[in-house]
Amino acid sequence: MPALSTGGKRKKTRERTASLPPSNRSELAAIKVRRAHELFTAIDGCSSWEEIHRAWSDYSAKQKGDLFEELVRAFLQIEPEYASKLKNIWLHNEVPQ
Image (cartoon, rainbow, N blue to C red; front, top):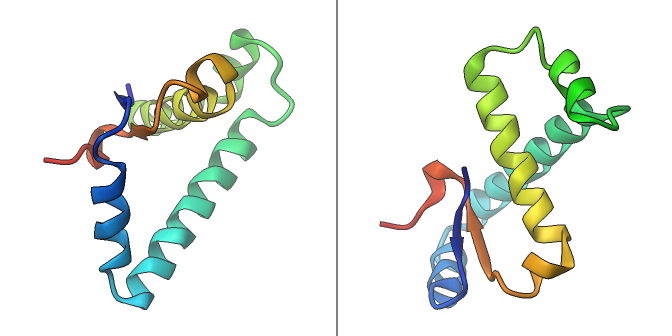
């Protein structure tokens, strides 16, 4: 499940990203685009949890977990009630130390 933050570390995260060499920043951007594409492809045509369950039936447990994290993050970023309250939403492997 994604980790949530109501702020505070946004500047630090931006500084950390800005301090990366341009090649690493472009790699990070490419990873984000790839993840978004994978999520879109995985839920395309699904309008219920049952349809998502069927569409993901051939995926491994790890793939399902990763996609679910991305789905929850996308929901929290898009849904106005949460988007207005949360500044950072990290996947499990992205949580700052």
